[in-house]
Length: 249
Image 1 (cartoon, helix red, strand yellow):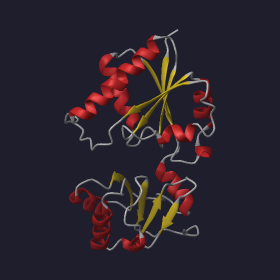
Image 2 (cartoon, one colour):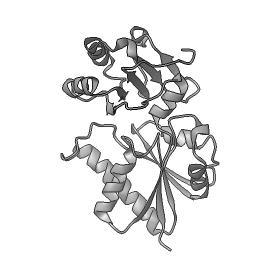
Image 3 (cartoon, one colour):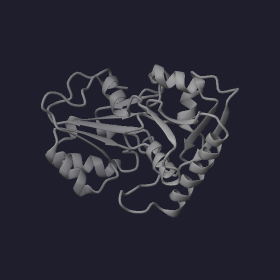
């Protein structure tokens, strides 16, 4: 029987957000290959998994996936492409040994995830490979639950985009959509706060840092956001009002 690669969404941080299907698959896979954003760092996805799945008897590999901006239709940076290919070849070798492999990724693998970059790289090498995706709770869903704020309702039009996009694209989203989710805002908070102010949407925005984790922070006064926001930070903007909020902290 052909071995299978499972690309698994772990949710945004709280191990209780791991779905039952994700839990059972991770439990059954003898090998875990987990991405990390820096060579000397540790995989956040793996740190979530190990809180609910005993990995002591599993073969665990942490692999470097550079967190660089990717523009579809353009070749990735050499460092990025090299890391993808190295991981893909490592995964192929494990699968060829006859074992199933789990690749946990934060949030949901359908939304700005490393999982599809690995998948595309693998398909370019071996198109007949057996791969299954297991969806997870997205960061924006967790932010919505924590803040008692819907992402979109009724006839709302929704845009989801990284805050690192150019100002023109963000302005257009603010203009054309009723609800906007800005992901990865940590490096560009000054820009986002300025654009929100220009659009008259500052009061319609709510900031969530490390959604679902034990040290999660929710801030509605954007002027009080810390000077160095965490990588896992999201802003939800609703033109029609944010609705009731959880107690902000």
